[in-house]
Figure 1 (cartoon, one colour):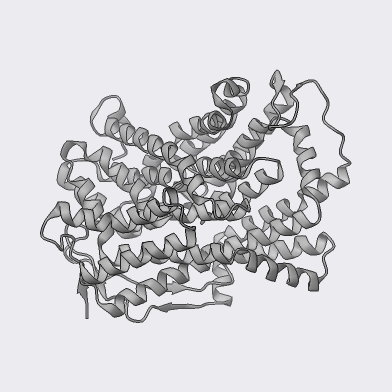
Figure 2 (spheres, rainbow, N blue to C red):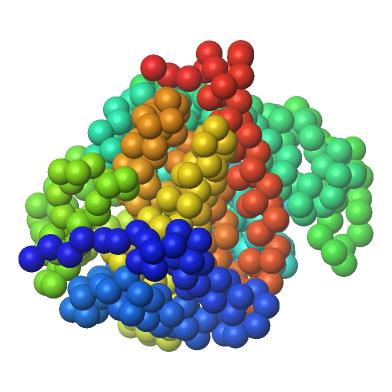
Length: 547
């Protein structure tokens, strides 16, 4: 039996859109203004979403319950699984006191916190995004920034802002290959189009995060480093996405950005070294404290091991082998092939929505992180018994974070399967000649709702193609705009904010993080929308469109 979605259940587009927006409004208001604890806010938003799905959209009770459980399970695995194991590794390094050595070693390479921010949050974060995604870059870079002495709000907010430009090509290009699967748009064409949108922003994000941290005067002192890091990422991002495809864009671009920035710091230093609050400013010629090489190697060892395992776990051959060894995939009872999207969101002959839960423990990114943490712990001198104790302690420490992530993903799933997300999307798509601008904001909305560029492409990819064809705009342009616009929503989605607050040991302050990043997210999304609008109608930007 199939249940058909209804995108105007109240018979009035304005009223239906207003009701569809209530879960998101309640969630964001509870976090940012009512200052309700985030796990309670997430449960409240989920409750509102369920009531609307059942009473307004008339979703079957069994399907509503199944989609809630399905979303919560996805929140715990793979996303919660990644966070648990990243924090486990982080706690191991903290207990061994390695953060001071790490800080001193970075002071020799990048003595200025503004450059540390560029190198860690932007360049290294992009490299990790290419291998892992699903919150891992924010968790890892946020934890490192805390070790370097950044305040929790700075570490959380700036890691979120930095994790924008690489997201569309994250996890070996999954968002774009998924878009091909749901919309029929060729992944290589969409990859090339995204590669003609995001590099502009890749170039400015290093400047942006430094300005957000230190102001325009602070940016002036390190703009050459920001330019090198941004250009060394943006140029390979364009070349690889256009001449190879979406799979290795972030890994290659991130590695180029890291290498170019480290090389540049060998030949250039800012005139004045900025210090974090409370530390005196010193001239750039002052030598950093000497750190024994063995101690430096010991401090960096956990992160080197982590990078190696993430790179290994991210290769298709290893993933395929591990999935064969530990296969576990099953259809969700009461939901799989029960819900059907209908025109104009989906083609008339669209298959009912699949609901497959993959418990791929072997190939999961979180498992690779766990193995890296265990190996690092043993190399740091932990006994197996102490590792088990620390793991249990970490799980208890982030219990509310895991509950929050489960509730957030359950909420996102309810909006997807009930059709409230499509009601919101259709409201943005009815904008006529301005559709390229608002269609880009639709991608932003999708990621803000679901926490994933991949999920946003699943939700709105088909809608973007259908609407583009109806309005005479390039479908490839709008498919790419959904993904490229979506990356700007990554910093405001509640799931990512919880990941950041957990990684920086600042759980309970999600409202402050949201207020810190919201304007940045909105401004960047508007700028992306304007670029897409120009590419749709205005020469010479129209020449950039892939056909």
